[in-house]
Image (cartoon, rainbow, N blue to C red; front, side):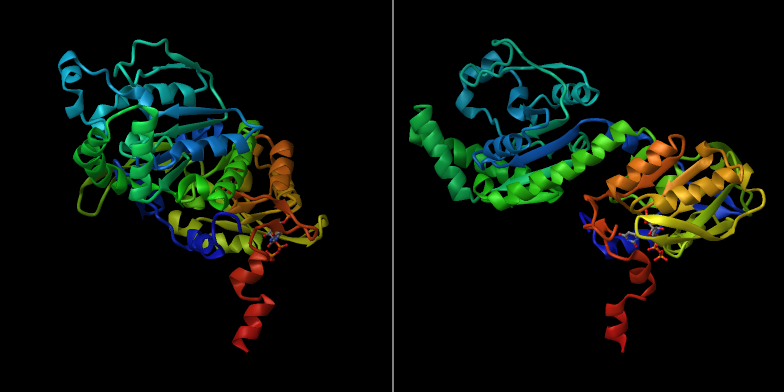
Length: 447
Ligand SMILES: O=P(O)(O)OC[C@H]1O[C@H](OP(=O)(O)OP(=O)(O)O)[C@H](O)[C@@H]1O
Ligand SMILES: O=c1cc[nH]c(=O)[nH]1
Protein backbone atom coordinates (compact mmCIF):
# COMPACT_ATOMS: atom_id res chain seq x y z
CA UNK A 1 0.00 0.00 0.00
CA UNK A 2 0.92 3.68 -0.16
CA UNK A 3 2.87 4.92 2.81
CA UNK A 4 2.34 2.13 5.32
CA UNK A 5 3.07 -1.55 4.97
CA UNK A 6 0.45 -4.19 5.64
CA UNK A 7 2.48 -5.22 8.67
CA UNK A 8 2.39 -1.68 10.08
CA UNK A 9 -1.33 -1.62 9.71
CA UNK A 10 -1.79 -4.99 11.33
CA UNK A 11 0.33 -3.67 14.19
CA UNK A 12 -1.78 -0.57 14.47
CA UNK A 13 -4.75 -2.86 14.98
CA UNK A 14 -3.31 -5.07 17.65
CA UNK A 15 -0.96 -2.70 19.41
CA UNK A 16 -3.01 -0.27 21.46
CA UNK A 17 -1.03 2.56 22.97
CA UNK A 18 -3.69 3.80 25.32
CA UNK A 19 -2.49 6.06 28.03
CA UNK A 20 -5.22 5.03 30.45
CA UNK A 21 -6.30 1.94 32.29
CA UNK A 22 -9.61 0.52 33.34
CA UNK A 23 -11.49 0.28 36.58
CA UNK A 24 -14.92 -1.28 36.20
CA UNK A 25 -15.36 -0.03 32.71
CA UNK A 26 -14.34 3.51 33.56
CA UNK A 27 -11.78 4.80 31.12
CA UNK A 28 -8.96 6.38 33.08
CA UNK A 29 -6.32 8.66 31.70
CA UNK A 30 -3.32 9.85 33.60
CA UNK A 31 -3.20 13.60 33.97
CA UNK A 32 -0.81 15.21 31.56
CA UNK A 33 -0.61 12.30 29.13
CA UNK A 34 -1.11 13.03 25.48
CA UNK A 35 -4.67 12.61 24.31
CA UNK A 36 -6.07 12.76 20.83
CA UNK A 37 -7.24 16.31 20.33
CA UNK A 38 -8.79 18.21 17.52
CA UNK A 39 -5.39 19.59 16.58
CA UNK A 40 -4.79 16.67 14.21
CA UNK A 41 -8.08 17.44 12.58
CA UNK A 42 -7.26 21.09 12.27
CA UNK A 43 -3.90 20.17 10.80
CA UNK A 44 -5.67 18.60 7.86
CA UNK A 45 -7.83 21.66 7.31
CA UNK A 46 -4.70 23.82 7.17
CA UNK A 47 -1.95 24.29 4.55
CA UNK A 48 0.53 21.47 4.06
CA UNK A 49 3.90 22.47 5.55
CA UNK A 50 7.15 21.04 4.22
CA UNK A 51 10.40 21.71 6.09
CA UNK A 52 13.64 21.56 4.11
CA UNK A 53 16.88 21.56 6.14
CA UNK A 54 20.53 20.78 5.37
CA UNK A 55 23.95 22.43 5.50
CA UNK A 56 24.66 25.74 3.82
CA UNK A 57 25.18 25.30 0.05
CA UNK A 58 23.73 21.77 0.19
CA UNK A 59 21.24 22.62 -2.57
CA UNK A 60 18.15 23.24 -0.42
CA UNK A 61 17.00 26.18 -2.51
CA UNK A 62 17.30 24.21 -5.75
CA UNK A 63 15.38 21.28 -4.25
CA UNK A 64 12.65 23.70 -3.11
CA UNK A 65 12.53 25.37 -6.53
CA UNK A 66 12.15 21.99 -8.23
CA UNK A 67 9.34 20.99 -5.86
CA UNK A 68 7.58 24.32 -6.44
CA UNK A 69 7.95 23.93 -10.21
CA UNK A 70 6.54 20.43 -10.22
CA UNK A 71 3.63 21.44 -7.97
CA UNK A 72 2.71 24.08 -10.56
CA UNK A 73 -1.04 23.64 -10.09
CA UNK A 74 -0.87 24.35 -6.34
CA UNK A 75 -0.51 27.65 -4.53
CA UNK A 76 2.91 27.30 -2.89
CA UNK A 77 4.72 29.83 -0.74
CA UNK A 78 8.40 29.64 0.13
CA UNK A 79 9.58 30.92 3.51
CA UNK A 80 13.34 31.18 4.13
CA UNK A 81 14.74 30.96 7.62
CA UNK A 82 17.38 33.49 6.48
CA UNK A 83 14.68 36.17 6.46
CA UNK A 84 14.55 35.85 10.23
CA UNK A 85 18.18 36.67 11.04
CA UNK A 86 18.41 39.04 13.99
CA UNK A 87 19.53 42.58 13.28
CA UNK A 88 23.21 42.95 14.18
CA UNK A 89 23.97 45.54 16.87
CA UNK A 90 26.44 48.33 16.24
CA UNK A 91 29.06 46.47 18.25
CA UNK A 92 28.47 43.21 16.33
CA UNK A 93 28.69 45.13 13.07
CA UNK A 94 32.15 46.45 13.88
CA UNK A 95 33.40 42.85 14.32
CA UNK A 96 31.15 41.08 11.85
CA UNK A 97 33.89 38.58 10.99
CA UNK A 98 33.51 37.24 14.55
CA UNK A 99 29.73 36.88 14.33
CA UNK A 100 28.45 33.32 14.00
CA UNK A 101 25.52 33.23 11.54
CA UNK A 102 25.27 29.45 11.81
CA UNK A 103 24.01 29.19 15.37
CA UNK A 104 20.34 28.72 16.32
CA UNK A 105 20.42 31.99 18.30
CA UNK A 106 21.30 33.93 15.13
CA UNK A 107 17.64 33.58 14.10
CA UNK A 108 14.54 35.25 15.54
CA UNK A 109 12.63 32.00 15.98
CA UNK A 110 9.80 33.67 17.91
CA UNK A 111 9.04 35.88 14.91
CA UNK A 112 9.32 32.90 12.56
CA UNK A 113 6.75 31.06 14.71
CA UNK A 114 4.39 34.04 14.67
CA UNK A 115 4.61 34.27 10.88
CA UNK A 116 4.10 30.54 10.40
CA UNK A 117 1.17 30.51 12.80
CA UNK A 118 -0.59 33.23 10.79
CA UNK A 119 0.10 31.54 7.47
CA UNK A 120 -1.21 28.25 8.81
CA UNK A 121 -4.39 30.02 9.87
CA UNK A 122 -4.82 31.34 6.34
CA UNK A 123 -3.73 34.94 7.00
CA UNK A 124 -1.40 37.07 4.88
CA UNK A 125 1.93 37.96 6.52
CA UNK A 126 4.82 40.37 6.13
CA UNK A 127 8.15 38.56 5.99
CA UNK A 128 11.32 40.60 6.64
CA UNK A 129 13.55 41.19 3.64
CA UNK A 130 16.98 40.62 5.16
CA UNK A 131 19.83 42.75 3.89
CA UNK A 132 22.78 40.36 3.60
CA UNK A 133 25.25 43.19 3.03
CA UNK A 134 24.15 45.45 5.87
CA UNK A 135 23.06 42.59 8.20
CA UNK A 136 19.75 44.30 8.95
CA UNK A 137 16.19 43.09 8.58
CA UNK A 138 14.44 46.46 8.62
CA UNK A 139 16.15 48.31 5.78
CA UNK A 140 14.18 46.90 2.85
CA UNK A 141 10.38 46.81 2.80
CA UNK A 142 8.96 43.50 4.08
CA UNK A 143 7.69 40.90 1.58
CA UNK A 144 3.90 40.49 1.64
CA UNK A 145 3.04 36.79 1.47
CA UNK A 146 -0.47 35.52 0.94
CA UNK A 147 -1.76 32.24 2.35
CA UNK A 148 -1.30 29.14 0.20
CA UNK A 149 -2.07 25.43 0.05
CA UNK A 150 1.56 24.49 0.59
CA UNK A 151 4.18 26.28 2.69
CA UNK A 152 7.82 25.33 2.21
CA UNK A 153 10.00 26.44 5.12
CA UNK A 154 13.66 26.21 4.18
CA UNK A 155 16.82 26.86 6.17
CA UNK A 156 19.89 25.35 7.78
CA UNK A 157 18.28 25.07 11.20
CA UNK A 158 14.55 24.71 10.58
CA UNK A 159 14.55 21.34 12.38
CA UNK A 160 16.34 22.68 15.44
CA UNK A 161 13.44 24.09 17.46
CA UNK A 162 10.79 21.47 18.35
CA UNK A 163 8.02 24.08 18.04
CA UNK A 164 9.01 24.77 14.44
CA UNK A 165 9.31 21.06 13.68
CA UNK A 166 5.84 20.50 15.09
CA UNK A 167 4.41 22.76 12.38
CA UNK A 168 5.66 20.49 9.61
CA UNK A 169 3.73 17.78 7.82
CA UNK A 170 6.83 16.58 6.00
CA UNK A 171 10.52 17.03 6.78
CA UNK A 172 13.21 16.78 4.12
CA UNK A 173 16.95 16.85 4.81
CA UNK A 174 19.21 17.66 1.87
CA UNK A 175 22.36 15.64 2.43
CA UNK A 176 25.24 16.81 0.27
CA UNK A 177 28.91 15.91 0.84
CA UNK A 178 30.91 18.40 2.91
CA UNK A 179 33.48 18.93 0.13
CA UNK A 180 30.76 19.74 -2.41
CA UNK A 181 29.20 22.21 0.03
CA UNK A 182 32.59 23.84 0.68
CA UNK A 183 33.45 24.05 -3.02
CA UNK A 184 30.10 25.71 -3.75
CA UNK A 185 30.60 28.11 -0.88
CA UNK A 186 34.06 29.15 -2.06
CA UNK A 187 32.76 29.70 -5.58
CA UNK A 188 29.72 31.64 -4.42
CA UNK A 189 31.56 33.87 -1.94
CA UNK A 190 34.68 34.57 -4.01
CA UNK A 191 33.36 34.74 -7.58
CA UNK A 192 29.81 35.92 -6.91
CA UNK A 193 30.27 37.99 -3.75
CA UNK A 194 33.89 39.07 -4.38
CA UNK A 195 35.16 37.93 -0.97
CA UNK A 196 38.70 36.95 -0.13
CA UNK A 197 39.22 33.16 -0.17
CA UNK A 198 41.22 33.28 3.07
CA UNK A 199 38.30 34.92 4.87
CA UNK A 200 35.86 32.39 3.40
CA UNK A 201 37.97 29.47 4.61
CA UNK A 202 38.45 31.08 8.03
CA UNK A 203 34.71 31.50 8.46
CA UNK A 204 34.15 27.91 7.31
CA UNK A 205 36.55 26.32 9.80
CA UNK A 206 35.68 28.68 12.68
CA UNK A 207 31.88 28.73 12.41
CA UNK A 208 30.28 26.90 9.49
CA UNK A 209 31.77 23.44 9.97
CA UNK A 210 31.45 23.28 13.80
CA UNK A 211 27.87 24.57 13.63
CA UNK A 212 27.04 21.98 10.98
CA UNK A 213 28.45 19.20 13.16
CA UNK A 214 26.92 20.46 16.40
CA UNK A 215 23.52 21.78 15.33
CA UNK A 216 22.56 20.93 11.76
CA UNK A 217 23.68 17.32 11.31
CA UNK A 218 22.03 16.21 14.59
CA UNK A 219 18.66 17.35 13.18
CA UNK A 220 18.93 14.92 10.28
CA UNK A 221 17.31 12.30 12.50
CA UNK A 222 14.05 14.25 12.44
CA UNK A 223 13.78 14.05 8.66
CA UNK A 224 11.10 11.89 7.03
CA UNK A 225 13.11 11.90 3.82
CA UNK A 226 16.85 12.36 3.28
CA UNK A 227 17.90 13.40 -0.21
CA UNK A 228 21.49 12.52 -1.06
CA UNK A 229 23.11 14.81 -3.69
CA UNK A 230 20.35 17.43 -3.43
CA UNK A 231 19.02 18.84 -6.68
CA UNK A 232 20.81 16.20 -8.80
CA UNK A 233 18.63 13.52 -7.30
CA UNK A 234 15.70 13.73 -9.71
CA UNK A 235 14.32 10.35 -8.69
CA UNK A 236 14.00 11.41 -5.04
CA UNK A 237 12.44 14.75 -5.97
CA UNK A 238 9.90 13.07 -8.28
CA UNK A 239 8.94 10.64 -5.51
CA UNK A 240 8.61 13.47 -3.00
CA UNK A 241 6.36 15.46 -5.32
CA UNK A 242 4.22 12.38 -5.94
CA UNK A 243 3.88 11.86 -2.19
CA UNK A 244 3.03 15.53 -1.61
CA UNK A 245 0.32 15.26 -4.25
CA UNK A 246 -1.23 12.26 -2.47
CA UNK A 247 -1.09 14.10 0.85
CA UNK A 248 -2.59 17.24 -0.71
CA UNK A 249 -5.43 15.08 -2.01
CA UNK A 250 -6.10 14.05 1.59
CA UNK A 251 -5.92 17.68 2.67
CA UNK A 252 -8.38 18.69 -0.01
CA UNK A 253 -10.81 15.99 1.04
CA UNK A 254 -10.59 17.03 4.68
CA UNK A 255 -11.30 20.59 3.61
CA UNK A 256 -14.37 19.47 1.65
CA UNK A 257 -15.67 17.05 4.27
CA UNK A 258 -15.55 18.41 7.79
CA UNK A 259 -16.60 14.98 9.10
CA UNK A 260 -13.44 13.27 7.77
CA UNK A 261 -10.38 12.81 9.98
CA UNK A 262 -7.14 11.43 8.56
CA UNK A 263 -5.00 10.61 11.54
CA UNK A 264 -1.24 10.79 11.70
CA UNK A 265 0.44 7.49 11.02
CA UNK A 266 1.70 7.20 14.59
CA UNK A 267 -1.79 7.37 16.07
CA UNK A 268 -3.89 4.31 16.68
CA UNK A 269 -7.22 4.38 14.88
CA UNK A 270 -9.42 3.00 17.65
CA UNK A 271 -7.81 5.07 20.35
CA UNK A 272 -8.03 8.20 18.23
CA UNK A 273 -11.65 7.48 17.37
CA UNK A 274 -12.54 7.33 21.07
CA UNK A 275 -11.10 10.81 21.43
CA UNK A 276 -13.98 12.06 19.24
CA UNK A 277 -16.65 10.95 21.67
CA UNK A 278 -18.09 13.35 24.24
CA UNK A 279 -16.80 12.72 27.76
CA UNK A 280 -17.03 14.25 31.24
CA UNK A 281 -14.65 14.41 34.17
CA UNK A 282 -15.12 11.61 36.66
CA UNK A 283 -13.39 10.71 39.92
CA UNK A 284 -13.01 7.24 41.37
CA UNK A 285 -11.65 6.03 44.67
CA UNK A 286 -9.09 3.30 44.13
CA UNK A 287 -8.72 0.23 46.44
CA UNK A 288 -5.95 2.13 48.26
CA UNK A 289 -8.45 4.91 48.99
CA UNK A 290 -6.73 7.34 46.63
CA UNK A 291 -8.95 9.60 44.58
CA UNK A 292 -8.18 9.44 40.91
CA UNK A 293 -9.52 11.85 38.31
CA UNK A 294 -10.31 10.47 34.92
CA UNK A 295 -12.93 10.73 32.23
CA UNK A 296 -16.11 8.86 31.46
CA UNK A 297 -17.96 8.83 28.18
CA UNK A 298 -21.18 10.86 28.26
CA UNK A 299 -23.17 8.27 26.43
CA UNK A 300 -22.97 4.52 26.34
CA UNK A 301 -20.92 2.99 23.56
CA UNK A 302 -20.96 -0.12 21.48
CA UNK A 303 -18.90 -1.46 18.61
CA UNK A 304 -20.28 -2.92 15.40
CA UNK A 305 -17.90 -4.85 13.20
CA UNK A 306 -18.46 -5.62 9.55
CA UNK A 307 -17.65 -9.32 9.16
CA UNK A 308 -14.91 -10.48 8.45
CA UNK A 309 -12.31 -7.78 8.28
CA UNK A 310 -13.95 -5.49 10.85
CA UNK A 311 -13.49 -8.24 13.44
CA UNK A 312 -9.74 -7.67 13.24
CA UNK A 313 -10.32 -4.32 15.02
CA UNK A 314 -12.33 -5.77 17.89
CA UNK A 315 -9.36 -6.60 20.12
CA UNK A 316 -8.13 -3.03 19.92
CA UNK A 317 -11.58 -1.76 20.87
CA UNK A 318 -11.87 -4.21 23.76
CA UNK A 319 -8.42 -3.22 24.97
CA UNK A 320 -9.60 0.39 25.14
CA UNK A 321 -13.13 -0.25 26.43
CA UNK A 322 -13.29 -3.30 28.63
CA UNK A 323 -16.52 -5.26 28.33
CA UNK A 324 -17.88 -3.19 25.43
CA UNK A 325 -20.77 -4.77 23.54
CA UNK A 326 -19.91 -5.52 19.92
CA UNK A 327 -22.60 -6.18 17.32
CA UNK A 328 -21.99 -7.81 13.92
CA UNK A 329 -23.09 -7.15 10.38
CA UNK A 330 -22.34 -9.47 7.45
CA UNK A 331 -22.60 -7.97 4.00
CA UNK A 332 -22.17 -9.93 0.80
CA UNK A 333 -20.32 -7.96 -1.84
CA UNK A 334 -20.31 -8.47 -5.59
CA UNK A 335 -17.93 -6.10 -7.40
CA UNK A 336 -19.01 -2.50 -7.08
CA UNK A 337 -22.69 -3.23 -6.53
CA UNK A 338 -25.04 -5.97 -5.38
CA UNK A 339 -24.37 -5.38 -1.68
CA UNK A 340 -26.65 -7.59 0.32
CA UNK A 341 -27.20 -7.72 4.06
CA UNK A 342 -26.87 -11.38 5.08
CA UNK A 343 -26.77 -11.25 8.87
CA UNK A 344 -27.01 -8.76 11.70
CA UNK A 345 -26.87 -9.05 15.46
CA UNK A 346 -26.84 -5.75 17.28
CA UNK A 347 -27.41 -4.66 20.91
CA UNK A 348 -31.17 -4.15 21.51
CA UNK A 349 -30.64 -0.67 22.88
CA UNK A 350 -28.29 0.38 20.08
CA UNK A 351 -30.31 3.56 19.40
CA UNK A 352 -29.22 4.87 22.83
CA UNK A 353 -25.54 4.28 22.19
CA UNK A 354 -22.68 5.86 20.31
CA UNK A 355 -21.65 3.31 17.70
CA UNK A 356 -18.05 2.65 16.66
CA UNK A 357 -18.42 1.00 13.27
CA UNK A 358 -15.33 -1.10 12.51
CA UNK A 359 -14.11 -1.92 9.01
CA UNK A 360 -10.46 -1.57 7.97
CA UNK A 361 -11.19 -1.13 4.25
CA UNK A 362 -13.35 1.51 2.57
CA UNK A 363 -13.36 0.81 -1.15
CA UNK A 364 -16.38 1.78 -3.25
CA UNK A 365 -18.17 2.66 -0.02
CA UNK A 366 -21.04 0.29 -0.77
CA UNK A 367 -20.48 -1.94 2.27
CA UNK A 368 -20.20 1.06 4.58
CA UNK A 369 -23.37 2.63 3.12
CA UNK A 370 -25.24 -0.65 3.64
CA UNK A 371 -23.99 -0.93 7.25
CA UNK A 372 -24.68 2.72 8.13
CA UNK A 373 -28.16 2.54 6.57
CA UNK A 374 -28.95 -0.44 8.80
CA UNK A 375 -27.79 1.46 11.90
CA UNK A 376 -29.98 4.42 10.97
CA UNK A 377 -32.93 2.07 10.45
CA UNK A 378 -32.32 0.77 13.98
CA UNK A 379 -32.75 4.31 15.27
CA UNK A 380 -29.08 5.28 15.81
CA UNK A 381 -28.78 9.03 15.18
CA UNK A 382 -26.34 9.68 12.31
CA UNK A 383 -24.23 11.94 14.53
CA UNK A 384 -23.73 9.05 16.99
CA UNK A 385 -21.89 6.93 14.41
CA UNK A 386 -18.10 6.92 14.22
CA UNK A 387 -16.68 4.90 11.34
CA UNK A 388 -13.17 3.62 12.15
CA UNK A 389 -11.14 2.61 9.13
CA UNK A 390 -7.54 1.96 8.18
CA UNK A 391 -7.29 2.22 4.39
CA UNK A 392 -9.72 4.09 2.19
CA UNK A 393 -10.13 4.98 -1.46
CA UNK A 394 -11.19 8.54 -2.36
CA UNK A 395 -14.29 7.11 -4.10
CA UNK A 396 -15.53 5.49 -0.89
CA UNK A 397 -14.76 8.60 1.16
CA UNK A 398 -16.81 10.77 -1.23
CA UNK A 399 -19.75 8.35 -1.24
CA UNK A 400 -19.94 7.97 2.56
CA UNK A 401 -19.19 11.59 3.48
CA UNK A 402 -21.72 12.95 0.99
CA UNK A 403 -24.47 10.56 1.90
CA UNK A 404 -23.95 10.78 5.68
CA UNK A 405 -22.59 14.25 6.44
CA UNK A 406 -23.16 13.90 10.18
CA UNK A 407 -21.23 10.69 10.84
CA UNK A 408 -17.51 10.95 11.55
CA UNK A 409 -14.97 8.94 9.58
CA UNK A 410 -11.55 8.33 11.10
CA UNK A 411 -9.09 6.75 8.70
CA UNK A 412 -5.32 6.42 8.66
CA UNK A 413 -4.77 6.55 4.91
CA UNK A 414 -6.56 7.75 1.79
CA UNK A 415 -5.03 5.90 -1.12
CA UNK A 416 -4.87 6.71 -4.84
CA UNK A 417 -8.05 4.97 -5.98
CA UNK A 418 -9.62 1.66 -6.99
CA UNK A 419 -8.56 -0.84 -9.65
CA UNK A 420 -10.88 -2.57 -12.12
CA UNK A 421 -11.69 -5.22 -9.48
CA UNK A 422 -12.65 -2.45 -7.00
CA UNK A 423 -9.63 -3.12 -4.81
CA UNK A 424 -7.97 -0.12 -3.19
CA UNK A 425 -4.67 0.77 -4.90
CA UNK A 426 -1.89 0.57 -3.94
CA UNK A 427 -3.84 -0.79 -0.96
CA UNK A 428 -3.18 -4.18 0.51
CA UNK A 429 -5.25 -6.63 -1.53
CA UNK A 430 -7.84 -8.75 0.25
CA UNK A 431 -7.53 -7.56 3.81
CA UNK A 432 -9.63 -10.38 5.28
CA UNK A 433 -7.64 -13.08 3.50
CA UNK A 434 -4.35 -11.57 4.55
CA UNK A 435 -5.37 -11.00 8.15
CA UNK A 436 -6.99 -14.39 8.66
CA UNK A 437 -4.38 -16.28 6.58
CA UNK A 438 -6.82 -17.55 3.95
CA UNK A 439 -5.01 -16.09 0.94
CA UNK A 440 -3.73 -18.61 -1.64
CA UNK A 441 -0.06 -17.68 -1.26
CA UNK A 442 -0.17 -18.35 2.42
CA UNK A 443 -1.91 -21.70 1.97
CA UNK A 444 0.71 -22.78 -0.52
CA UNK A 445 3.50 -21.69 1.79
CA UNK A 446 2.16 -23.74 4.69
CA UNK A 447 1.47 -26.85 2.65
O1 LIG B 1 -16.19 -0.30 0.08
P1 LIG B 1 -16.43 -1.63 -0.55
O2 LIG B 1 -16.12 -1.62 -2.03
O3 LIG B 1 -17.78 -2.16 -0.25
O4 LIG B 1 -15.32 -2.62 0.03
C1 LIG B 1 -15.04 -2.70 1.38
C2 LIG B 1 -15.41 -4.03 1.94
O5 LIG B 1 -14.52 -5.02 1.43
C3 LIG B 1 -13.95 -5.74 2.51
O6 LIG B 1 -14.68 -6.83 2.83
P2 LIG B 1 -14.75 -8.11 1.88
O7 LIG B 1 -16.00 -8.06 1.05
O8 LIG B 1 -13.47 -8.25 1.13
O9 LIG B 1 -14.96 -9.31 2.87
P3 LIG B 1 -14.02 -9.95 4.00
O10 LIG B 1 -13.82 -8.94 5.05
O11 LIG B 1 -14.85 -11.09 4.49
O12 LIG B 1 -12.75 -10.43 3.40
C4 LIG B 1 -13.93 -4.72 3.62
O13 LIG B 1 -13.80 -5.29 4.88
C5 LIG B 1 -15.21 -3.97 3.42
O14 LIG B 1 -16.29 -4.51 4.13
O1 LIG C 1 -8.94 -3.31 -1.53
C1 LIG C 1 -9.87 -3.94 -1.01
C2 LIG C 1 -11.21 -3.64 -1.32
C3 LIG C 1 -12.19 -4.37 -0.68
N1 LIG C 1 -11.83 -5.35 0.18
C4 LIG C 1 -10.53 -5.62 0.49
O2 LIG C 1 -10.22 -6.48 1.30
N2 LIG C 1 -9.59 -4.89 -0.14
